[in-house]
Length: 314
Image (cartoon, rainbow, N blue to C red; front, side):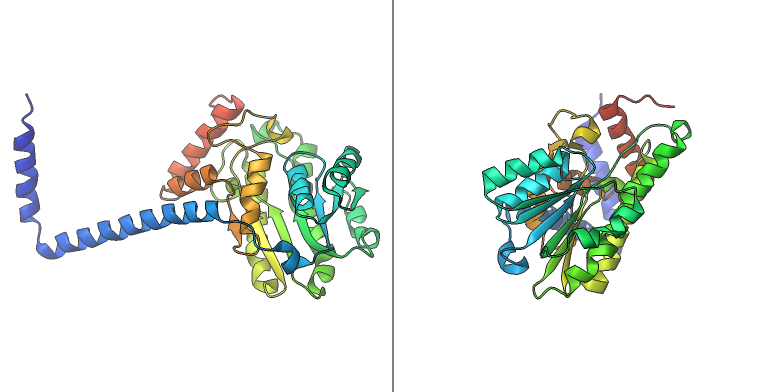
Protein backbone atom coordinates (compact mmCIF):
# COMPACT_ATOMS: atom_id res chain seq x y z
CA UNK A 1 0.00 0.00 0.00
CA UNK A 2 1.30 3.46 -0.96
CA UNK A 3 2.19 5.65 2.02
CA UNK A 4 1.31 9.27 1.14
CA UNK A 5 3.46 10.67 3.96
CA UNK A 6 6.53 8.83 2.65
CA UNK A 7 5.96 10.29 -0.80
CA UNK A 8 5.67 13.81 0.64
CA UNK A 9 8.86 13.32 2.66
CA UNK A 10 10.74 12.11 -0.44
CA UNK A 11 9.57 15.13 -2.42
CA UNK A 12 10.69 17.43 0.42
CA UNK A 13 14.14 15.84 0.53
CA UNK A 14 14.48 16.23 -3.25
CA UNK A 15 13.52 19.92 -3.08
CA UNK A 16 16.06 20.50 -0.29
CA UNK A 17 18.82 19.26 -2.61
CA UNK A 18 17.95 21.81 -5.32
CA UNK A 19 20.27 24.88 -5.16
CA UNK A 20 18.55 28.02 -3.94
CA UNK A 21 19.31 29.90 -7.18
CA UNK A 22 17.55 27.28 -9.29
CA UNK A 23 14.67 27.05 -6.82
CA UNK A 24 14.28 30.81 -6.90
CA UNK A 25 14.28 30.83 -10.69
CA UNK A 26 11.60 28.13 -10.79
CA UNK A 27 9.48 30.16 -8.36
CA UNK A 28 9.84 33.26 -10.54
CA UNK A 29 8.81 31.29 -13.64
CA UNK A 30 5.80 29.96 -11.75
CA UNK A 31 4.82 33.45 -10.60
CA UNK A 32 5.23 34.83 -14.13
CA UNK A 33 3.06 32.08 -15.62
CA UNK A 34 0.41 32.59 -12.94
CA UNK A 35 0.29 36.34 -13.64
CA UNK A 36 0.06 35.72 -17.41
CA UNK A 37 -2.71 33.18 -16.80
CA UNK A 38 -4.74 35.60 -14.67
CA UNK A 39 -4.07 38.53 -17.00
CA UNK A 40 -5.35 36.59 -20.01
CA UNK A 41 -8.46 35.51 -18.16
CA UNK A 42 -9.14 39.02 -16.87
CA UNK A 43 -8.74 40.48 -20.38
CA UNK A 44 -11.32 38.07 -21.79
CA UNK A 45 -13.92 39.00 -19.20
CA UNK A 46 -13.11 42.71 -19.43
CA UNK A 47 -13.69 42.67 -23.21
CA UNK A 48 -16.91 40.68 -22.77
CA UNK A 49 -18.38 43.39 -20.56
CA UNK A 50 -17.46 46.33 -22.80
CA UNK A 51 -20.17 48.20 -24.70
CA UNK A 52 -19.75 49.75 -28.14
CA UNK A 53 -18.19 53.15 -28.67
CA UNK A 54 -20.37 55.87 -30.24
CA UNK A 55 -20.24 54.67 -33.85
CA UNK A 56 -22.34 57.52 -35.26
CA UNK A 57 -20.06 60.11 -33.71
CA UNK A 58 -16.96 58.31 -34.97
CA UNK A 59 -18.09 57.29 -38.47
CA UNK A 60 -20.93 59.68 -39.35
CA UNK A 61 -24.59 59.83 -38.37
CA UNK A 62 -26.08 59.51 -41.85
CA UNK A 63 -23.49 57.26 -43.44
CA UNK A 64 -23.80 53.83 -45.04
CA UNK A 65 -22.46 50.39 -44.18
CA UNK A 66 -21.76 48.02 -47.08
CA UNK A 67 -21.94 44.32 -46.19
CA UNK A 68 -20.86 41.62 -48.63
CA UNK A 69 -22.80 38.38 -48.32
CA UNK A 70 -25.41 40.28 -46.32
CA UNK A 71 -28.44 38.18 -47.24
CA UNK A 72 -27.70 35.21 -44.98
CA UNK A 73 -25.83 33.99 -41.93
CA UNK A 74 -23.23 36.20 -40.29
CA UNK A 75 -23.59 38.81 -43.04
CA UNK A 76 -27.28 39.23 -42.31
CA UNK A 77 -26.45 39.62 -38.61
CA UNK A 78 -23.99 42.42 -39.48
CA UNK A 79 -26.71 44.09 -41.55
CA UNK A 80 -29.20 43.91 -38.69
CA UNK A 81 -26.65 45.01 -36.09
CA UNK A 82 -25.69 48.20 -37.90
CA UNK A 83 -29.29 48.93 -38.97
CA UNK A 84 -30.32 48.62 -35.31
CA UNK A 85 -27.73 51.29 -34.53
CA UNK A 86 -29.22 53.64 -37.13
CA UNK A 87 -26.84 53.16 -40.07
CA UNK A 88 -28.07 52.99 -43.65
CA UNK A 89 -27.24 49.68 -45.29
CA UNK A 90 -26.00 48.44 -48.66
CA UNK A 91 -26.46 44.68 -49.02
CA UNK A 92 -24.18 43.14 -51.63
CA UNK A 93 -24.95 39.52 -52.41
CA UNK A 94 -25.48 37.08 -55.27
CA UNK A 95 -28.65 35.86 -53.52
CA UNK A 96 -31.90 37.63 -54.45
CA UNK A 97 -32.97 37.12 -50.84
CA UNK A 98 -31.09 40.36 -50.23
CA UNK A 99 -34.24 42.22 -51.34
CA UNK A 100 -36.24 40.56 -48.55
CA UNK A 101 -33.63 41.56 -45.98
CA UNK A 102 -33.75 45.12 -47.34
CA UNK A 103 -37.52 45.34 -46.81
CA UNK A 104 -37.25 43.91 -43.29
CA UNK A 105 -34.63 46.35 -42.04
CA UNK A 106 -36.32 49.35 -43.68
CA UNK A 107 -39.56 48.49 -41.92
CA UNK A 108 -38.13 47.40 -38.57
CA UNK A 109 -35.30 49.89 -38.09
CA UNK A 110 -36.50 52.84 -40.19
CA UNK A 111 -33.23 53.18 -42.08
CA UNK A 112 -32.46 53.47 -45.78
CA UNK A 113 -31.29 50.34 -47.56
CA UNK A 114 -29.98 49.48 -51.00
CA UNK A 115 -29.29 46.14 -52.71
CA UNK A 116 -26.53 45.30 -55.18
CA UNK A 117 -26.74 41.84 -56.73
CA UNK A 118 -23.19 40.85 -57.55
CA UNK A 119 -21.19 37.69 -58.17
CA UNK A 120 -18.00 38.19 -56.18
CA UNK A 121 -16.13 35.68 -58.34
CA UNK A 122 -16.53 38.16 -61.22
CA UNK A 123 -13.57 40.53 -60.91
CA UNK A 124 -14.95 42.88 -63.56
CA UNK A 125 -18.21 43.23 -61.61
CA UNK A 126 -16.26 44.18 -58.48
CA UNK A 127 -14.29 46.83 -60.38
CA UNK A 128 -17.58 48.39 -61.53
CA UNK A 129 -18.91 48.69 -57.97
CA UNK A 130 -17.30 52.09 -57.55
CA UNK A 131 -19.86 53.46 -60.02
CA UNK A 132 -22.78 51.69 -58.36
CA UNK A 133 -22.03 53.20 -54.96
CA UNK A 134 -21.37 56.70 -56.25
CA UNK A 135 -23.24 59.19 -54.08
CA UNK A 136 -23.31 56.90 -51.02
CA UNK A 137 -21.24 58.05 -48.06
CA UNK A 138 -19.91 54.60 -47.15
CA UNK A 139 -18.23 54.75 -43.75
CA UNK A 140 -17.90 51.03 -42.98
CA UNK A 141 -17.09 48.12 -45.28
CA UNK A 142 -17.86 44.65 -43.93
CA UNK A 143 -16.08 41.97 -45.98
CA UNK A 144 -18.13 39.00 -44.88
CA UNK A 145 -18.75 36.91 -48.01
CA UNK A 146 -17.03 33.56 -47.89
CA UNK A 147 -17.35 29.88 -48.73
CA UNK A 148 -16.12 26.77 -46.94
CA UNK A 149 -15.24 23.24 -48.00
CA UNK A 150 -14.03 20.54 -45.65
CA UNK A 151 -12.77 17.03 -46.20
CA UNK A 152 -10.05 15.38 -48.27
CA UNK A 153 -8.43 17.95 -50.60
CA UNK A 154 -7.69 15.26 -53.19
CA UNK A 155 -11.42 14.63 -53.61
CA UNK A 156 -12.45 18.28 -54.03
CA UNK A 157 -13.12 19.49 -57.59
CA UNK A 158 -10.73 22.13 -58.88
CA UNK A 159 -13.72 24.41 -59.51
CA UNK A 160 -14.65 24.28 -55.81
CA UNK A 161 -11.10 25.05 -54.73
CA UNK A 162 -10.87 28.02 -57.11
CA UNK A 163 -14.23 29.35 -55.93
CA UNK A 164 -13.03 29.15 -52.33
CA UNK A 165 -9.88 31.11 -53.19
CA UNK A 166 -11.70 33.64 -55.38
CA UNK A 167 -14.47 34.41 -52.88
CA UNK A 168 -12.44 34.31 -49.68
CA UNK A 169 -9.21 35.94 -50.88
CA UNK A 170 -9.59 37.67 -54.23
CA UNK A 171 -12.99 39.28 -53.72
CA UNK A 172 -12.12 40.61 -50.26
CA UNK A 173 -8.85 42.07 -51.51
CA UNK A 174 -10.54 43.70 -54.51
CA UNK A 175 -13.44 45.04 -52.43
CA UNK A 176 -10.99 46.81 -50.13
CA UNK A 177 -8.90 48.03 -53.06
CA UNK A 178 -11.99 49.37 -54.86
CA UNK A 179 -13.52 51.24 -51.91
CA UNK A 180 -10.31 52.29 -50.15
CA UNK A 181 -10.04 55.73 -51.83
CA UNK A 182 -13.61 56.59 -50.75
CA UNK A 183 -12.97 55.44 -47.18
CA UNK A 184 -9.66 57.33 -46.93
CA UNK A 185 -10.90 60.69 -48.14
CA UNK A 186 -13.94 61.05 -45.91
CA UNK A 187 -13.87 63.88 -43.36
CA UNK A 188 -14.57 61.41 -40.55
CA UNK A 189 -13.00 58.08 -39.73
CA UNK A 190 -13.99 54.97 -41.66
CA UNK A 191 -13.80 51.28 -40.82
CA UNK A 192 -13.16 47.93 -42.50
CA UNK A 193 -14.37 44.72 -40.87
CA UNK A 194 -13.06 41.44 -42.27
CA UNK A 195 -14.53 38.06 -41.36
CA UNK A 196 -11.58 35.75 -40.94
CA UNK A 197 -11.55 32.65 -38.73
CA UNK A 198 -9.47 31.26 -35.90
CA UNK A 199 -8.75 28.40 -38.28
CA UNK A 200 -6.31 30.79 -39.94
CA UNK A 201 -4.25 31.11 -36.79
CA UNK A 202 -3.14 27.48 -36.49
CA UNK A 203 -3.27 24.35 -38.61
CA UNK A 204 -6.82 23.21 -39.30
CA UNK A 205 -6.90 19.67 -40.70
CA UNK A 206 -9.79 18.74 -43.04
CA UNK A 207 -10.22 22.45 -43.90
CA UNK A 208 -6.69 23.12 -45.10
CA UNK A 209 -7.37 25.47 -48.02
CA UNK A 210 -10.15 27.28 -46.17
CA UNK A 211 -7.83 27.84 -43.19
CA UNK A 212 -5.11 29.13 -45.52
CA UNK A 213 -7.50 31.68 -47.04
CA UNK A 214 -8.41 32.90 -43.55
CA UNK A 215 -4.74 33.19 -42.59
CA UNK A 216 -4.30 35.40 -45.65
CA UNK A 217 -7.14 37.66 -44.49
CA UNK A 218 -5.61 38.00 -41.02
CA UNK A 219 -2.22 39.04 -42.40
CA UNK A 220 -3.95 41.39 -44.85
CA UNK A 221 -5.71 43.13 -41.95
CA UNK A 222 -2.57 43.36 -39.80
CA UNK A 223 -0.58 44.83 -42.69
CA UNK A 224 -3.29 47.24 -43.87
CA UNK A 225 -3.72 48.44 -40.30
CA UNK A 226 -0.16 49.76 -40.22
CA UNK A 227 -0.72 51.61 -43.49
CA UNK A 228 -4.08 53.26 -42.86
CA UNK A 229 -4.77 53.23 -39.09
CA UNK A 230 -4.78 57.03 -38.86
CA UNK A 231 -7.87 57.21 -41.10
CA UNK A 232 -9.47 53.77 -41.01
CA UNK A 233 -10.24 51.39 -38.15
CA UNK A 234 -9.58 47.74 -39.00
CA UNK A 235 -11.26 44.84 -37.23
CA UNK A 236 -10.39 41.24 -38.11
CA UNK A 237 -13.05 38.92 -36.65
CA UNK A 238 -11.79 35.37 -36.06
CA UNK A 239 -14.49 33.16 -34.53
CA UNK A 240 -14.35 29.40 -34.13
CA UNK A 241 -17.53 27.55 -35.18
CA UNK A 242 -20.68 29.61 -35.85
CA UNK A 243 -24.10 28.17 -36.69
CA UNK A 244 -24.83 29.39 -40.23
CA UNK A 245 -25.93 27.96 -43.59
CA UNK A 246 -22.19 27.41 -44.26
CA UNK A 247 -21.94 25.08 -41.25
CA UNK A 248 -25.29 23.42 -42.04
CA UNK A 249 -27.02 25.25 -39.16
CA UNK A 250 -25.14 23.18 -36.63
CA UNK A 251 -26.81 23.22 -33.20
CA UNK A 252 -25.83 26.16 -30.99
CA UNK A 253 -24.23 25.24 -27.67
CA UNK A 254 -20.84 25.01 -25.97
CA UNK A 255 -18.28 26.57 -28.30
CA UNK A 256 -20.78 26.82 -31.17
CA UNK A 257 -22.43 30.24 -31.20
CA UNK A 258 -25.19 31.82 -33.26
CA UNK A 259 -24.38 34.39 -35.94
CA UNK A 260 -26.12 37.04 -33.83
CA UNK A 261 -23.93 36.30 -30.80
CA UNK A 262 -20.83 36.26 -32.97
CA UNK A 263 -21.55 39.72 -34.38
CA UNK A 264 -22.80 41.36 -31.17
CA UNK A 265 -19.73 40.12 -29.30
CA UNK A 266 -17.33 41.21 -32.03
CA UNK A 267 -18.78 44.66 -32.71
CA UNK A 268 -17.76 45.95 -29.28
CA UNK A 269 -14.12 45.68 -30.43
CA UNK A 270 -14.64 47.99 -33.42
CA UNK A 271 -12.58 51.15 -32.94
CA UNK A 272 -10.74 49.61 -29.97
CA UNK A 273 -8.60 46.73 -31.19
CA UNK A 274 -7.38 45.07 -34.37
CA UNK A 275 -8.67 41.53 -33.89
CA UNK A 276 -11.16 39.55 -31.84
CA UNK A 277 -12.56 36.04 -31.57
CA UNK A 278 -15.97 37.48 -30.72
CA UNK A 279 -17.80 35.52 -28.04
CA UNK A 280 -16.42 34.80 -24.59
CA UNK A 281 -16.55 31.04 -25.24
CA UNK A 282 -14.43 31.40 -28.38
CA UNK A 283 -11.94 33.64 -26.56
CA UNK A 284 -11.65 31.10 -23.75
CA UNK A 285 -10.98 28.23 -26.18
CA UNK A 286 -8.43 30.36 -28.05
CA UNK A 287 -6.77 31.28 -24.75
CA UNK A 288 -6.69 27.60 -23.73
CA UNK A 289 -5.02 26.36 -26.92
CA UNK A 290 -2.63 29.32 -27.22
CA UNK A 291 -0.26 27.64 -24.76
CA UNK A 292 -0.10 24.42 -26.75
CA UNK A 293 2.52 23.54 -29.36
CA UNK A 294 1.68 23.30 -33.07
CA UNK A 295 1.08 19.54 -33.05
CA UNK A 296 -1.28 19.83 -30.07
CA UNK A 297 -3.17 22.71 -31.72
CA UNK A 298 -3.50 20.70 -34.93
CA UNK A 299 -4.81 17.65 -33.03
CA UNK A 300 -7.28 19.80 -31.10
CA UNK A 301 -8.55 21.39 -34.33
CA UNK A 302 -8.79 18.03 -36.11
CA UNK A 303 -10.81 16.46 -33.29
CA UNK A 304 -13.15 19.46 -33.25
CA UNK A 305 -13.75 19.26 -37.01
CA UNK A 306 -14.25 15.47 -36.90
CA UNK A 307 -16.82 15.68 -34.12
CA UNK A 308 -18.80 18.59 -35.58
CA UNK A 309 -18.90 17.37 -39.18
CA UNK A 310 -18.96 13.61 -38.45
CA UNK A 311 -15.72 12.91 -40.31
CA UNK A 312 -13.74 9.71 -39.95
CA UNK A 313 -9.98 9.52 -39.45
CA UNK A 314 -8.20 8.74 -42.75
